[in-house]
Image 1 (cartoon, rainbow, N blue to C red):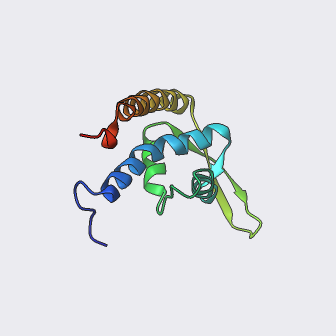
Image 2 (image 1 turned 135 degrees about the vertical axis):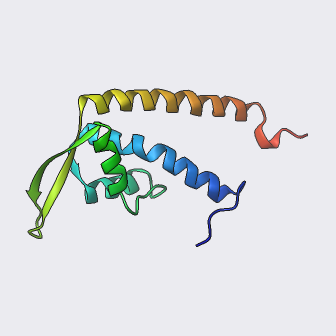
Length: 123
């Protein structure tokens, strides 16, 4: 599939998803330790299938390298495979709080601006 055209709604959607996925993964892990499949399923289901991650491991490794999550332990799944569980760190919780505060500030600003008339201001 060719890259999204600049100025397209698909480009905006892709950029938005990339920007919030890290925050949402940390938010899920702040609730409970999860393995990769749980994280991707929860992200999809809890977002009403608006968000998904095809390859979450690059994000996990980046969060591990930054000290925001750890590979905590492994547990056997019902199918016998061992699943790696991820856990948020104290530093990850602080980072999540910063991201959440920033997200709310930005989204509130956008909402205020769009509320002034947005694309339908009659001009």
